Image 1 (cartoon, chains in turn green, brown):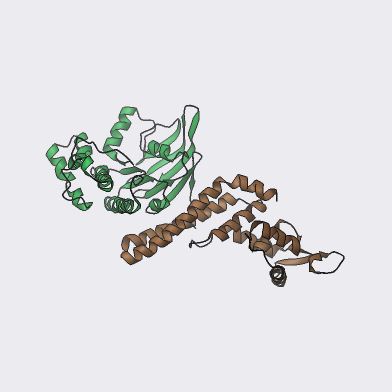
Image 2 (cartoon, rainbow over the protein chains, first blue to last red):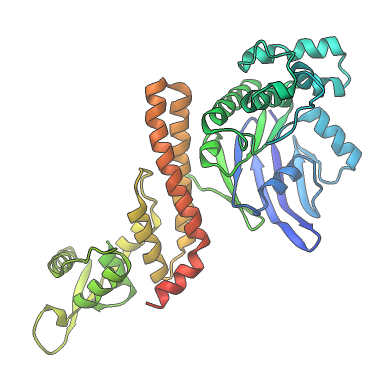
Length: 223
Length: 171
């Protein structure tokens, strides 16, 4: 279980400010949903927390280590070894089978193919995908593909899982199944989760919700 | 509470209160004069307003009503406290927002607090769904969809607050 913290993060794209002093803390093992209107900076904040983007100012800490000032190579290594990702679209490699897709993070971290596939396979039963191991992404429904992506995000037991609109391309009921599995798996593994969504019913699966507005974070006070 | 809130803005006659209520809150269902004066009498009895200077002439419309500290405290508490996150709250939320803008209060903060209350309830209902049977799930879903509709309204209203503030100020 590893904590994440952003302190006064500022980031602009050219002349356009995206984050204007955003701060947020995520406790170890906590599931936090970042909400906000379109263009508010919520995805940019997630990308900064996940070491995909480096902020212009401010600090990002993961598990007590400052990560905003790492080099691109160091950030890339951190993402591969410590973080899992689930995005909205097009994340499975179409040439690979479903089980190879799930095993991919392990293969990239140097685990031998047989061992990686062995570690990947139990996820299929766990996520209701038994029998689909050899299918390619074009042979999976949207909900199945997203569950494969979830398995891939969690297979290496990352310290943190970052999910950007993970149910955005799914119908309501399928989206709920994916969220149910995401929450159950993350809790089982003790994985810290940061989730970006515009959908309040998806955000309600999180332990806590924060709102990003005009590049700043409004922590929602719980009454 | 709406009439009391209007009095917090400025001392008013019953007639002016009815006019402002009908303009902003009644939505095609004007408040009967009888109800205005019955409410004002009750508020006087409860010490939340007092009758100020009585202008020359006859008839109840000559009385000017003034809010007391107790009344102002009631308005403040009502605006600040989020309502329970139950479905179909649009009328109450709408009244709170318009009154808050009239009184120069932080309507956006109230809406943020309300959003947090709604999300907390949605989280509770989602937990019920995750651990429950199909009947629990369907009942929780009903609440969730209605609360979600409220949240859409809250978000849109936040985006329109500046325009609404001008509308309310230009009454």
